[in-house]
Image 1 (cartoon, rainbow, N blue to C red):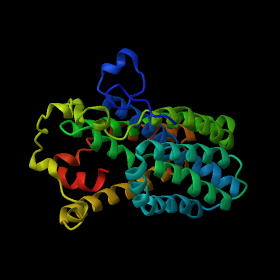
Image 2: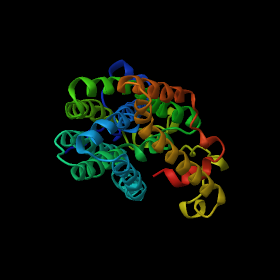
Image 3: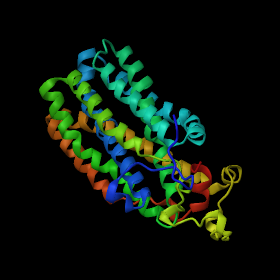
Length: 316
């Protein structure tokens, strides 16, 4: 397909009318935040709402059903390097589109699952894998490519979508109670595709392709012979090989792994444990959404303390 460019050979961005005067990096954050919001609602936090209905229908123990969620997390860690290589080669947009399409299709097929085995296959092979490719790595690629001075603010804004998404879990619980979990899966499949596909369609690789520097700074035309913008020592960063040989990198990695481990355990079993104590599914989902929404005040800003190592290991 022919690539649209301006007269100066710079690729065109999507037409945004008067809104196009806003630095496009902010629209990138909006797209990433919408994706995180949706995945948070239907997968990160929302999966717990499906736990008991699915376990009851298939006659599965909680341990047996929990295995699907555990394997899904293992899968994300194993596929991580492949996601990074694909983003390096093709950019974040096609990887996100592939992931979200797979996740949406996965929810459609989950509504037809006839046994616990098929639940495992579909949940791990499509829903979890789609999430991994859609948003496991791409949000930080967006932040690292499009922002430098405002990296902390940008990362906080894009990941606020995760907390906002938790507010929709009570609606999912009401849908399960009213229509059944299979119909809820179909509705979630439609909603996921309707939100995530347009959101990922606005994603672009890096600002330099469009005549900008990170944070919206203008890059001087090459014909003017202007010296390149000076880069501070903190921004030069390590190479990947240098970063993985530092203790700081492994401390950061351990912290992220520990955080995600506890996050998964709590969110998956939060609703079932409250239901055991006499709460309805909708009430339990409401309390989970409150706990998740509080996280909007959290600042995901490791870049302020370790910017060079983060950039070396997370920027394509």
